[in-house]
Length: 289
Ligand code: AMP
Ligand code: MG
Image (tube, rainbow, N blue to C red; front, top):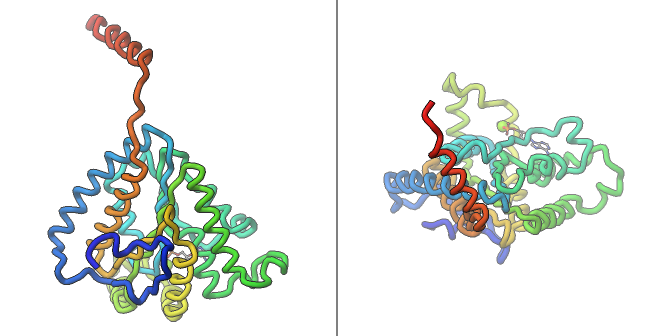
């Protein structure tokens, strides 16, 4: 497992999460990867500028993972290469009263960027088939019984798949990252959050409670990935035990999708070009005041 293509899930076959690595191969050099990531971030900025200028396609990057898998720091790294004016980041927490009183995609739709812009979702509507599935939270949701009968989670997978296709048909691309951290590495990072004062704020006892459901979460992720991966909206199941490697693969995936979008600066027609030249002359003929 050496390049991005080893980690793409596009729906052509069912995957098993246990077959995906959480660490890079030993043969991979950190030094080289860090250099490549830096170059990728620079290339991303150029693409983003074109995307914005053209205003035709919107791009949404979804990050999902267990606690301490590195969502925040990966997002920070992606952002470091981009123009903040063309991108919004949103973290999806436990739904507010208003959010819970709407259908589950509502709060994500509200956060969709205008075409030409990007959005990063730290968690997303996938929580509604992950934490909601693991804890059967739908049982206590204020909804009519008909909505809870049968397999609500299966129905939501379909809703998500249709929704992502709908967005694609309206000029959006949504790509989804699962940061695949091992249970051992999560323990290490939790201990660090407990032991290091400056990291205490990142830890909550509820993180431990979720850890106790590790296997159920892995099953929920595997099922959600298999049910919602598609050619236009693939999942990337990325090794997350080494942050420098995760960052690199994310940058590769973002570049890949930019290449598919292939944004171009708008070309001016002849009249507009003439106007530009005329404006240039006006500027040049100004007297120095
Ligand atoms: P964090 O990302 O660590 O700040 O935590 C946010 C918490 O909100 C996580 O425990 C998520 O599982 C939880 N959360 C996000 N979306 C939902 C949802 N739709 N229903 C229930 N819990 C959610
Ligand atoms: Mg948390």
